[in-house]
Image 1 (cartoon, one colour):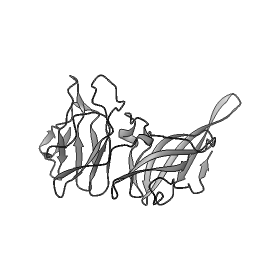
Image 2 (cartoon, one colour):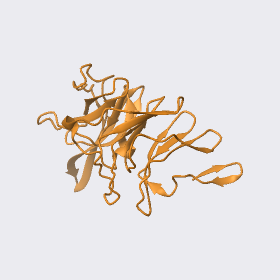
Image 3 (cartoon, one colour):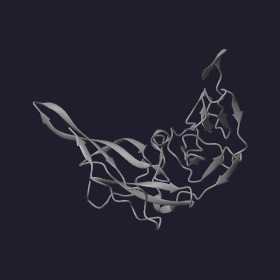
Image 4 (cartoon, helix red, strand yellow):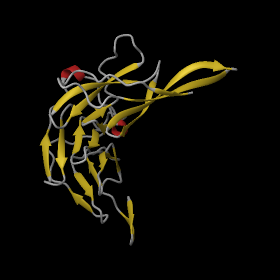
Amino acid sequence: SCWNAAGPCTSPVASSEGVAMAATSDGLLAWGGIDASGRLSADGWQLLGDERWAELPASPLQARHHAASAWTGSRLVVIGGSSDPNVNGVGNLRDGATYDPATKRWRTIAPIPDSLSGQIDRRCRDDTVYAASLVVIPCMSPERAGDDTTIRTVAAYRPDGDTWTTVSVFVGTDGHPQSWFNVDDRLGVVSIGARPPVSGLPQAEVTVSLAGKAAGTDGVTPTPPEPQSTIE
Protein backbone atom coordinates (compact mmCIF):
# COMPACT_ATOMS: atom_id res chain seq x y z
CA SER A 1 0.00 0.00 0.00
CA CYS A 2 0.99 3.66 -0.21
CA TRP A 3 -0.07 7.14 0.90
CA ASN A 4 -0.78 10.36 -0.94
CA ALA A 5 -2.18 13.78 -0.05
CA ALA A 6 -5.73 12.41 -0.02
CA GLY A 7 -4.89 9.52 2.31
CA PRO A 8 -4.08 5.84 1.78
CA CYS A 9 -3.96 4.43 -1.74
CA THR A 10 -4.15 0.79 -2.75
CA SER A 11 -1.31 -1.14 -4.36
CA PRO A 12 -2.25 -3.83 -6.90
CA VAL A 13 0.41 -6.09 -5.38
CA ALA A 14 -0.34 -5.41 -1.72
CA SER A 15 -1.92 -8.82 -1.16
CA SER A 16 0.82 -10.79 -2.97
CA GLU A 17 4.23 -12.11 -1.99
CA GLY A 18 7.23 -13.13 -4.04
CA VAL A 19 6.75 -10.10 -6.29
CA ALA A 20 9.78 -9.08 -8.39
CA MET A 21 10.37 -5.41 -7.50
CA ALA A 22 12.89 -2.72 -8.31
CA ALA A 23 13.10 0.93 -7.30
CA THR A 24 13.74 3.34 -10.17
CA SER A 25 14.80 6.98 -10.11
CA ASP A 26 11.19 8.12 -10.15
CA GLY A 27 9.08 5.25 -8.85
CA LEU A 28 8.79 1.49 -8.49
CA LEU A 29 8.37 -1.46 -10.85
CA ALA A 30 6.64 -4.66 -9.74
CA TRP A 31 5.93 -7.88 -11.62
CA GLY A 32 4.55 -11.34 -10.89
CA GLY A 33 4.02 -12.88 -7.46
CA ILE A 34 1.53 -15.15 -5.74
CA ASP A 35 -1.56 -14.19 -3.74
CA ALA A 36 -3.04 -15.77 -0.63
CA SER A 37 -5.21 -18.12 -2.69
CA GLY A 38 -2.17 -19.51 -4.53
CA ARG A 39 -2.89 -17.73 -7.81
CA LEU A 40 0.25 -16.92 -9.75
CA SER A 41 0.52 -13.59 -11.54
CA ALA A 42 2.15 -12.47 -14.76
CA ASP A 43 0.96 -8.89 -14.33
CA GLY A 44 3.30 -5.96 -14.02
CA TRP A 45 2.84 -2.49 -12.52
CA GLN A 46 4.70 0.80 -12.31
CA LEU A 47 4.27 3.21 -9.42
CA LEU A 48 4.60 6.66 -10.95
CA GLY A 49 5.85 9.85 -9.35
CA ASP A 50 2.31 11.10 -8.73
CA GLU A 51 1.61 7.87 -6.77
CA ARG A 52 -0.57 6.33 -9.48
CA TRP A 53 -0.15 2.69 -10.47
CA ALA A 54 0.04 2.02 -14.21
CA GLU A 55 -0.22 -1.50 -15.63
CA LEU A 56 2.74 -2.72 -17.69
CA PRO A 57 2.40 -4.31 -21.14
CA ALA A 58 2.13 -8.10 -21.21
CA SER A 59 5.40 -9.87 -20.39
CA PRO A 60 6.85 -12.76 -22.46
CA LEU A 61 7.30 -14.70 -19.19
CA GLN A 62 4.84 -17.14 -17.70
CA ALA A 63 3.31 -16.41 -14.29
CA ARG A 64 5.68 -17.06 -11.38
CA HIS A 65 6.71 -16.02 -7.90
CA HIS A 66 10.00 -15.22 -6.17
CA ALA A 67 11.92 -14.30 -9.31
CA ALA A 68 15.23 -12.48 -8.90
CA SER A 69 15.03 -8.84 -9.99
CA ALA A 70 17.19 -5.74 -10.29
CA TRP A 71 17.15 -2.24 -11.78
CA THR A 72 20.05 -1.43 -14.12
CA GLY A 73 19.39 2.29 -14.28
CA SER A 74 17.30 1.95 -17.42
CA ARG A 75 15.73 -1.53 -17.35
CA LEU A 76 14.04 -3.95 -14.96
CA VAL A 77 15.62 -7.41 -15.08
CA VAL A 78 13.52 -10.42 -14.02
CA ILE A 79 15.20 -13.84 -13.81
CA GLY A 80 14.01 -17.30 -12.79
CA GLY A 81 11.44 -17.89 -10.07
CA SER A 82 8.94 -20.68 -9.46
CA SER A 83 5.85 -21.68 -11.43
CA ASP A 84 4.73 -24.06 -8.69
CA PRO A 85 2.40 -22.35 -6.18
CA ASN A 86 3.03 -25.16 -3.69
CA VAL A 87 6.79 -24.61 -3.54
CA ASN A 88 7.80 -21.95 -1.04
CA GLY A 89 10.10 -19.83 -3.12
CA VAL A 90 12.55 -22.34 -4.65
CA GLY A 91 12.89 -21.63 -8.35
CA ASN A 92 12.42 -24.14 -11.14
CA LEU A 93 12.51 -21.60 -14.00
CA ARG A 94 15.65 -20.46 -15.83
CA ASP A 95 14.29 -17.91 -18.29
CA GLY A 96 14.11 -14.16 -17.86
CA ALA A 97 13.31 -10.83 -19.47
CA THR A 98 14.03 -7.12 -19.25
CA TYR A 99 11.53 -4.27 -19.29
CA ASP A 100 12.37 -0.76 -20.52
CA PRO A 101 9.96 1.87 -19.12
CA ALA A 102 11.09 4.41 -21.74
CA THR A 103 9.95 2.26 -24.67
CA LYS A 104 7.39 0.22 -22.69
CA ARG A 105 8.81 -2.96 -24.20
CA TRP A 106 9.85 -6.33 -22.83
CA ARG A 107 12.72 -8.38 -24.22
CA THR A 108 13.60 -12.00 -23.42
CA ILE A 109 17.14 -12.67 -22.23
CA ALA A 110 19.54 -15.61 -22.26
CA PRO A 111 18.36 -18.29 -19.79
CA ILE A 112 20.44 -19.40 -16.84
CA PRO A 113 23.00 -21.83 -18.38
CA ASP A 114 23.45 -25.44 -17.29
CA SER A 115 26.87 -24.61 -15.88
CA LEU A 116 25.20 -22.29 -13.36
CA SER A 117 22.55 -24.77 -12.35
CA GLY A 118 22.19 -23.61 -8.74
CA GLN A 119 18.57 -22.81 -7.99
CA ILE A 120 17.42 -19.24 -7.51
CA ASP A 121 15.48 -19.38 -4.26
CA ARG A 122 13.47 -16.76 -2.41
CA ARG A 123 16.53 -15.13 -0.82
CA CYS A 124 17.51 -13.74 -4.22
CA ARG A 125 14.56 -11.41 -4.18
CA ASP A 126 16.35 -9.36 -1.53
CA ASP A 127 19.99 -10.18 -2.29
CA THR A 128 20.14 -9.58 -6.05
CA VAL A 129 22.12 -6.42 -6.79
CA TYR A 130 23.22 -4.51 -9.90
CA ALA A 131 26.88 -3.51 -9.76
CA ALA A 132 29.77 -3.21 -12.21
CA SER A 133 27.32 -3.59 -15.14
CA LEU A 134 26.28 -7.02 -13.80
CA VAL A 135 23.12 -8.36 -12.21
CA VAL A 136 24.69 -10.41 -9.41
CA ILE A 137 22.64 -13.27 -7.94
CA PRO A 138 24.45 -14.15 -4.70
CA CYS A 139 22.45 -17.21 -3.65
CA MET A 140 23.41 -18.95 -6.90
CA SER A 141 26.83 -20.27 -5.95
CA PRO A 142 28.03 -22.60 -8.73
CA GLU A 143 31.33 -23.44 -7.10
CA ARG A 144 33.91 -22.67 -4.47
CA ALA A 145 37.43 -21.73 -5.40
CA GLY A 146 38.99 -25.11 -4.57
CA ASP A 147 39.40 -25.58 -0.83
CA ASP A 148 39.71 -21.86 -0.16
CA THR A 149 36.81 -21.08 2.15
CA THR A 150 37.58 -17.36 1.95
CA ILE A 151 36.28 -17.09 -1.63
CA ARG A 152 32.68 -17.27 -2.80
CA THR A 153 31.88 -17.53 -6.51
CA VAL A 154 28.42 -16.38 -7.53
CA ALA A 155 26.45 -16.13 -10.75
CA ALA A 156 25.94 -12.88 -12.62
CA TYR A 157 24.07 -11.74 -15.72
CA ARG A 158 25.50 -9.08 -18.04
CA PRO A 159 22.57 -7.12 -19.59
CA ASP A 160 24.68 -5.29 -22.18
CA GLY A 161 25.95 -8.50 -23.76
CA ASP A 162 23.08 -10.81 -22.78
CA THR A 163 25.57 -13.27 -21.30
CA TRP A 164 26.16 -15.08 -18.01
CA THR A 165 29.38 -15.06 -16.02
CA THR A 166 30.69 -15.55 -12.47
CA VAL A 167 32.18 -13.16 -9.94
CA SER A 168 34.42 -14.06 -7.01
CA VAL A 169 34.32 -12.13 -3.75
CA PHE A 170 36.19 -12.40 -0.46
CA VAL A 171 33.86 -13.51 2.37
CA GLY A 172 36.38 -14.13 5.16
CA THR A 173 37.49 -17.42 6.69
CA ASP A 174 34.39 -19.57 7.12
CA GLY A 175 32.40 -16.45 6.41
CA HIS A 176 28.73 -16.44 5.51
CA PRO A 177 27.60 -13.56 3.27
CA GLN A 178 24.86 -11.55 4.94
CA SER A 179 24.37 -8.48 2.76
CA TRP A 180 25.28 -7.51 -0.80
CA PHE A 181 25.44 -3.93 -2.02
CA ASN A 182 26.57 -1.53 -4.74
CA VAL A 183 29.08 1.17 -3.86
CA ASP A 184 30.48 3.38 -6.64
CA ASP A 185 29.34 0.73 -9.15
CA ARG A 186 31.32 -1.99 -7.40
CA LEU A 187 30.01 -5.13 -5.76
CA GLY A 188 30.36 -5.21 -2.00
CA VAL A 189 29.57 -7.92 0.54
CA VAL A 190 29.28 -8.02 4.31
CA SER A 191 30.12 -11.46 5.75
CA ILE A 192 29.96 -12.88 9.26
CA GLY A 193 32.21 -15.71 10.42
CA ALA A 194 32.56 -17.52 13.73
CA ARG A 195 35.51 -16.94 16.05
CA PRO A 196 36.63 -18.92 19.12
CA PRO A 197 34.47 -18.15 22.20
CA VAL A 198 35.81 -15.74 24.80
CA SER A 199 34.90 -16.48 28.44
CA GLY A 200 32.27 -18.86 27.14
CA LEU A 201 30.61 -16.19 25.00
CA PRO A 202 30.27 -16.66 21.20
CA GLN A 203 32.28 -14.32 19.03
CA ALA A 204 31.85 -13.22 15.42
CA GLU A 205 34.08 -11.65 12.81
CA VAL A 206 32.49 -9.17 10.39
CA THR A 207 34.24 -8.74 7.04
CA VAL A 208 33.48 -6.02 4.50
CA SER A 209 35.00 -6.46 1.05
CA LEU A 210 34.70 -5.18 -2.51
CA ALA A 211 35.02 -7.15 -5.74
CA GLY A 212 36.83 -5.70 -8.74
CA LYS A 213 35.35 -3.29 -11.24
CA ALA A 214 34.03 -5.89 -13.67
CA ALA A 215 34.20 -9.57 -14.53
CA GLY A 216 36.44 -11.14 -17.17
CA THR A 217 35.79 -10.14 -20.78
CA ASP A 218 35.46 -13.75 -21.88
CA GLY A 219 32.30 -14.10 -19.84
CA VAL A 220 33.59 -16.79 -17.49
CA THR A 221 36.70 -15.42 -15.76
CA PRO A 222 35.98 -14.43 -12.15
CA THR A 223 37.04 -11.04 -10.85
CA PRO A 224 39.69 -11.39 -8.14
CA PRO A 225 38.71 -9.65 -4.90
CA GLU A 226 40.69 -6.72 -3.56
CA PRO A 227 42.09 -6.61 0.00
CA GLN A 228 39.36 -6.66 2.60
CA SER A 229 38.82 -4.75 5.82
CA THR A 230 37.86 -6.65 8.94
CA ILE A 231 35.88 -5.37 11.93
CA GLU A 232 36.22 -7.43 15.08
